[in-house]
Every structure is written in structure tokens, then in C-alpha cells.
Image (cartoon, rainbow, N blue to C red):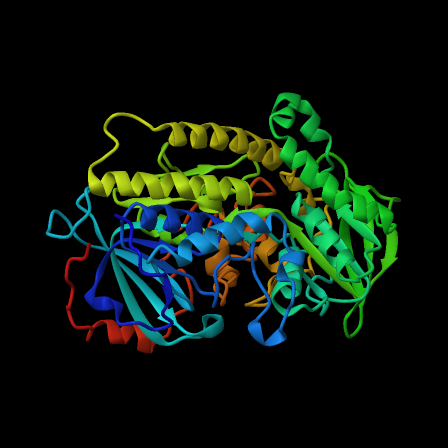
Length: 511
């Protein structure tokens, strides 16, 4: 029977003595859907997230002190999230906010309390606000669902380090969580459908958006009309974003890119140029646009550090990113470990919710030994929805895939452009490492230049470094151009690591 006790928030509970049935990492659409589904099937669930509230990046909300009367006004499909939140609050699950998970470790196999796959997991986190926590926490579970979402792909350009140049998703996060605009006149640029959502949000909040600059264009969608016809909701969503932009005089620039930002103390203008088929600027097409902020992002890449550290198999998505391989029930290739949402491939909130529910149901069936008779009607419906939404996601990914010309000869990336912001490494130093010092891949570049050794560990500069290292052939968003096994998914202090040695072994099996 499902738990009847309301779900509760525990910023720093004594969890080391309890083994939950399932630990969910990430409280966005996928994680929340998976946690709700598992809890409603009678499993004990711990839901961990670095943010103070539910919703993840997609449903990020203003802090309570701002007193926002209608936070839903900044969101698309708020009703779906509100329904999941209400179900979670009634489920009896445990929400652990401000828990920044840095690794997941296998503890025991074939032991009392282990899952049906013989797995038992220790999820290690540090607690605190904004990723600066130094108090270690360990949450144990018989199964783990990874729903850690995605990060923005950034392609550097001259002037991108000026104040006022921020990520497109970052601009949306500022608006959703702080009710703050990045500027009064904001150019939105990059590639992918997120640009339309960001631009329409900024316009609705009162910003002037002189241009939406899309590097890819939208003709790629026309190549698969059947996929488009099967997803009318996506078309309606796009129209909902485009209509207010047209009414407010926002000019679209398809097959264009911001190739330079100008300014002294902060950005004052950008140069936009038309791109050829390989994403090289076409000489003579440059146009200067005045602005005081630039929101730029070239799509999203899955955050899979926790999965690759455990040896999960990966696949390459149509836009060159890397995602975890999952089966029909969202189980990874590592027994006892599931993945849902953007970690299994970027596809939007609706796909994330579907995958989360599939994962939660599969975990419950696995731990309870049920589901032998084949999929239920609900599961078959979810599988059909997932196939339809994944087909659209693949189409979207291919349509907005970056070509390699932006960082090669004739591209917009000049030698003086800083590529690795953490270590202040410019493109010229990376090219020197490749051409003069013989670096054959991004790992060698990393060792010779320190590009990727800073605070972000290559998550921001990885695409550019890999592209330069392979002569423009790589599009991966992680160094060294293939998934790394990172022991630390987020920064963690030596004090927190040292505390693990003295952690008492107080495990007990929980139902």
C-alpha cells in the first residue's frame, strides 16, 4: 500500500541509518515523476536535489522572499508540474533539498536489503546553498534513478566574456528565480528551440528583444513531416512563443550567429553574420545590433557524470552530445541504476515526465518482483508516447546540430578568443598545442594548456577544446571528446571527503 504520510522536506536529516527503496537524484520533471510513481506504488523514496524546492531548472520558481503572486505566469505547462507536486506531497516520500550529489557508489551485492539486481547504493552529497556546502551526507538505496537534467552548450566567440553575455538558460533562470532581467535590450542567440522560449519570456517580462539569432534555421524539420504531424502539441507550443515575438517586433535571423560582442565595461552591441552550411560566417553579411545583454546558448547536453563514473554505456545523439543508454523501462546498463529525462537524451519536459513515470513503475516492479505478465495498458500508452516524443526530439536534435566550421579556418573563433574561462586559455594556445606540440586529442590539449582543469572541469569549454583539438571534427561537450569517468560530479571540499572515513556504519534495511 502507498504511504499515507505527507511528503516532507528535510534539509539535513539523519539519513545514513536508513536504506530507502529508491533514491532519486534530481527533482525536475523526470525525477519528480519517477519519485511520485515509485512512492505511489508503496516504495520508500528519497528525492535529492541541489535546489531548495521542487521543479528543477524547467520549473524553477522565485524565492519565497520575493512574494511572487503568480509564479506560474513564467512557465509553460504549469498544470502538469502542479499535479505532480500535489501527488508528491501526499505520497509520503522524503524530499532532501540543497543536497549536491558528487558521486554514487555501489556498496553491497546479494546482501539483505539489496535490490532485486543485487544492488545497494550509497549516494554521497554535500549539503548547503548554491553548491558551497561542506557538510557530507550519505543517502542509501536499493535502486537509484538518475534525473540530473542537462547543461547548456556554449560555443565561444570574441567578446563572450564581457559582462552582460550570459547563457540563454541562465537568462531564463534569472527571470524565473529572481524576477530579474539580464538587461533592458537583450539579443537572444545560439541554436535550438530554447531560444524562442527564452525570448518570449523576456518580452513578457518587459525586456526589448531586438533579435533572435538562430544558427541553424528551421527547414530541417520539414524533412520529416510525419514526425511533425505526430506532435501537434510541439507545433502549438512553438506558435505560442513566436506569436508574441512577432507582435513585439522581434526580428528573426535564421542561419545567422553572433560572431563578436563589443563593449568596454560591458556588452554594448553584437555583430551578427550569416552562416554557410558549415557554420562559417559569410563575408560581407555582418550587421551590428545595439544591446546591453546577450543571452546565448547552442542547445543542451545531458549531465551524465554520475552514470559514466559507474560505467554506464552511452550513445551519441544526433547533435553530437552524449546520453546514457536505457532500455524500455529506463534502466541503464548498470544493474540497479535507472535514468530518465535529459540524461537519457534531451527531449523536453513532456518526454521527461513520461520517462520518469516509466522508470518509477519499472523500479517498483523490479523491487516487488511484479510485472511478469507483460506491460499494462498504462505502460503501453507511455511507451507509445515516449516513441513519439523521442522521434521529435531526434528530429529537433538533428535540425539544430552544430556544424564544425565555427572553430576552423574561416570560422568566428580567432586566436585571441578565450576558450577556457577558468584557466584563461585562449584559442591560440590550444591551436599551438595541436599544431606545434603534437596534441592529438583534447586530453593532450588539457595536459599541455590546462584547458578544462578549472572549476567547471571542462563542462563549459569542452565543446570548443574538443573541436579545436580534432580540427573541427568533434562536437562533444565533455573532455577529452568522449565520456570521462569523473569521481567528482560537483566540487567537494577535502573536509567533506575526510569525514567519510569516520562515518559510522549504521545501515539498516528499510521497506
